[in-house]
Image 1 (spheres, rainbow, N blue to C red):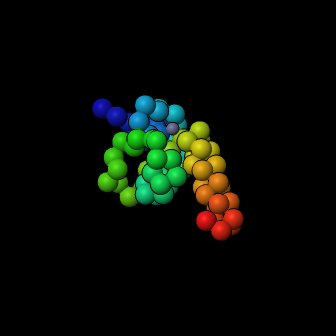
Image 2: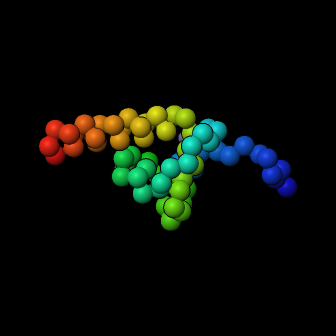
Image 3: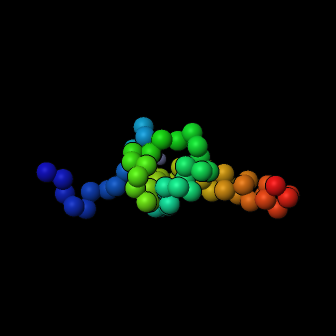
Length: 70
Ligand SMILES: [Zn+2]
C-alpha cells in the first residue's frame, strides 16, 4: 500500500526525481519535444527541478526568437 504523503516523482519518462512544479503538458511537449511524458492526455504534468529548468530555458529561447521577429 502506498502512503498518501509519498513524494511525487517527475512524470517525464525515465526520470524519478522529486516533483517541484506542475506545468501544462501541451506547453511542455512544445518546448521540449524530445521528452516523453507518462501520460500525454493529462492536462498537466508534474516535473522535477531539472526538467523545469530545461523547460524554462526552452521557453526563454522561444521568446527570444519571437522578439527577433520570428
Ligand atoms: Zn524530471
